[in-house]
Amino acid sequence: MNGTYERPLSRRRVEVVTVWFGYVLSHWRGPRMPRFSSPLVSAWNPVLAQGLSVDASAPAPYMDELWCDRWIAEALLYGRKPYGAFTLPADEALRWFDKSGGTGLVYQAEVAGDLVRVVAGTADRYGRLFDLDALIADYRDALPPGLAEPEIAALDSHRAQSPALHYILSENAEVLFTQAPLSVRGLTLGYPPRETAARIAAGAAT
Image (cartoon, rainbow, N blue to C red; front, side, top):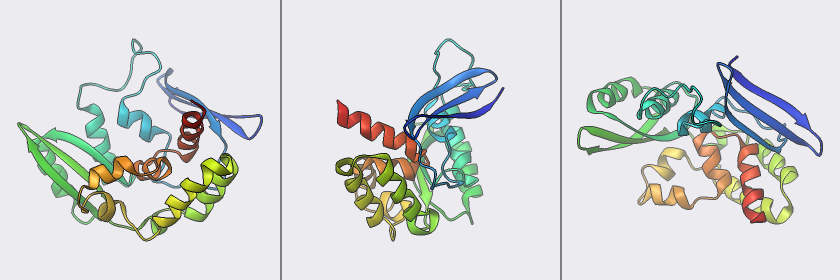
């Protein structure tokens, strides 16, 4: 059994489980955000990019310490993720650079010994990549006004920005990314907004 399984809960909430050959990799509950969808956003993105597993002793797809990096690199190439960072051996990184031509991806790379660290993202604008009006409406329903409005303002201000120009090519780009509101960071990484909204709410409750 492989896939993402969803179950609606009361109070406009949903339960989501990702499963790999019968083993649970992630399990969470959060608000329903039914208006927004995008091929660049998937429940698998946070799971496979971070090597998540509910039970550390259970079988998982992560074959070695660079498995998640290779997955991120491929997801970027094939339009499953708008932005990401990965580290690969130099020969693999060079092959990735060759394949990235014509994809609309922009990247910065630095050598670290025998490895190359790459930060890459699409040059297209957020307003073209995503239905931000639908996402903003979902955030407005999913969070109390005091939590929703700052996130909505951040998303709205990013309409004319792009992951590449703002978080790769600008000065101190990676620092800017770490300081961006959670709604923007989650969307930029291709993480489901309902997971991000649940994290925002949990952070406010602590």
